[in-house]
Image 1 (cartoon, rainbow, N blue to C red):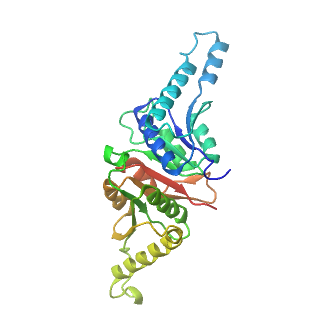
Image 2: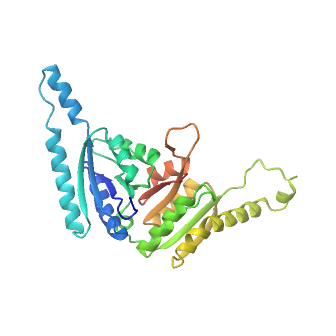
Length: 295
């Protein structure tokens, strides 16, 4: 299946967060010229079967709820952009597992930051977090204010990782900046470890300068190939001293999308989220794209 044939999948459940995700996903599908698939998942079949076997009253008709939610989301999507090719699917399956399976042949996966039934004080819904941690395609968790959700800032923020482990995220961010006509803000955070000894020759005089120069070099190396393929993209390169997660949350206030990478770790199931991605998913002030590093 080619990239343009792969659908952009958005999880819907009728919550306010999922409605915002539908709006964002419609615009994203239109930008990239890909079909949009609205996916609803619930274990209603399992619950109804267990209730019937026990002889008790049937669970409220979750099937009817799912059909209503999907129909309403589809109508919302059509009103927003009737030119986007649209399909819907209802899974009798755990929501996280259903979306993870859908991610196997998806262009990307979109979710709201909180779903139906999530506690109001919860920073990020459990389904969104599970999907972002394990999916094998880019996952975008839609959050932020109106300016960020409608592209009002004109900037895509890349949390620049290490060359060799953050390349997929860099390519994704550059493509996003190009299709949006946005500036790419590529930010590489660096720190000078407090335990470094002054008797190390290269660090003896200016340890901070050494780490900053290294960050600049790594940033240039990371962007070289993606920008060669997309030379029209305007880039603002920034290196900042500080913790990456705090630096990126602060910069996300002026971005329409923040992009970070995720990497596979030997001996772990699926993708594991590091501190930077985890913090952004909970606290960023714009949508967050978590992009898995390809094998």
